[in-house]
Image 1 (tube, rainbow, N blue to C red):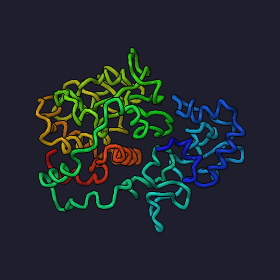
Image 2 (image 1 turned 90 degrees about the horizontal axis):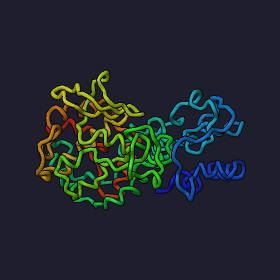
Image 3 (image 1 turned 90 degrees about the vertical axis):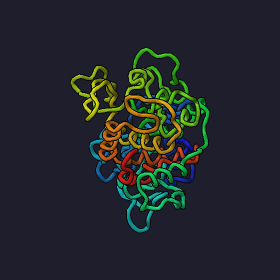
Image 4 (image 1 turned 135 degrees about the horizontal axis):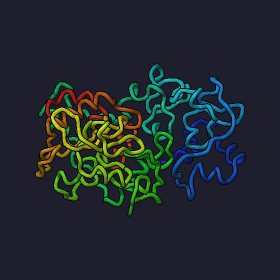
Length: 376
């Protein structure tokens, strides 16, 4: 998948964006151009500098007469007007719903309704609800009867998403550039456990001593929970995320839960925390991800219980027994699933993983199926 600086250059975007790229190349110094696309074409780590100037409300989604920009993509290019957040909404103007239906492409208003818009920051405000399929292939779920429930539905979904194309562990580094690159204003690799935006190559862990040193490959369902074997689950991107190495180590193999805020003994830069749990049925130590990722991780776990049904012969842990979620954790994850519904970034990630593994997370495509399964 091309990076955003590449995508603005190619013909899949409107011609005005191609012209914008040319103007920026001429107008900005080589330093700023490198900050936009990164050395050797790689996206940089960290924040970008803005250009002087201001947005008027009518400039939102376009260029200000001052020369700076007032669209959602400006953060990735470092050419935002100073007041863009205050004047313009976070999502581009316009919507995906209506006739003609632009899902899978660009809306007439200029915002986008395709499966990668979250990575490029130009989704229409209603993309997640209007185009919830995320571009799922026609017929992918044709063998699933919508009336099925419980064990019948679980078995059918397992058969559908089983035997995916497994990646090597080393291939995950480059896969993250496709699944987690260019999200929410981060031109590099987006982190779910910290506020860091990582360079995809130079910020990979090795060694670390504090938060912000590097990122690694987090098994959100800890690999010790199935005995650590390096089969398909070891590199399954539906539960693997790029995370700050230090914070990942803080989490270890602790279960997810709602932590007692006042008793947290570590809080990361984006609000992830470790401490005593207040989830109903469990009061031991746990790890709470930021609110924006609770639903994502819940649906990752729902995927794991179905994809690896009867495949995990080990282990009895605080959160699981084999591939079955313990009742307290399942109840917690169901709450998170409702509170943090499927978002555009999650739809885009599902689509990207489908391109790499050949299978999908059915609970991202059809979140309503969670309620049709009484025991996950």
